Length: 172
Ligand SMILES: CC(C)(COP(=O)(O)OP(=O)(O)OC[C@H]1O[C@@H](n2cnc3c(N)ncnc32)[C@H](O)[C@@H]1OP(=O)(O)O)[C@@H](O)C(=O)NCCC(=O)NCCS
Image (cartoon, protein in one colour):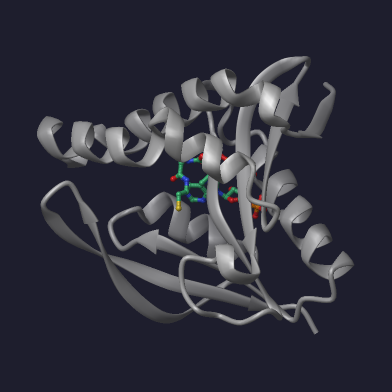
């Protein structure tokens, strides 16, 4: 088995849009109404929004390949691109998604390790993320990787207010 992680550039826009929609849909469609899913997908992954995020120098996207097949992606934010004011010594994992058929093969772990490598290289002291309180699989996964819950914030899925746990991991 070969695993490869590559940094996305603006040329990857279309593939990134496709995998973002596919993985978000697969993860959340069973627990949310179709209307709220459509509203969220349209807001988060429309072409303008994704182009803006891809060209933000404080955000980075990475693809992960398993035996040359695209298996998932990672988005990290630094500085002002973070979705909460966590300060310049923090790095946010905003998105970490492994396509369904590639889950439980260790690839999520590779992407967390990649985020940690980026954070350490940039002398960050903390890595953090927001995870939906009902996403138990992901919460278990983050706990195994040493994250602890340190707060919560709300966000909107369509017109429904939902709670995200804030989980953090200290790097030094
Ligand atoms: C959560 C996710 C990123 C984990 O990636 P993955 O490649 O499936 O996980 P890995 O195979 O790397 O597993 C890493 C560890 O987490 C554990 N783990 C993974 N999925 C788990 C689950 N569903 N329940 C319990 N533990 C789990 C593994 O057993 C492994 O533990 P170990 O280190 O003790 O062996 C992936 O399943 C995913 O993309 N899920 C859907 C999208 C999602 O929810 N993203 C997070 C949004 S906040």
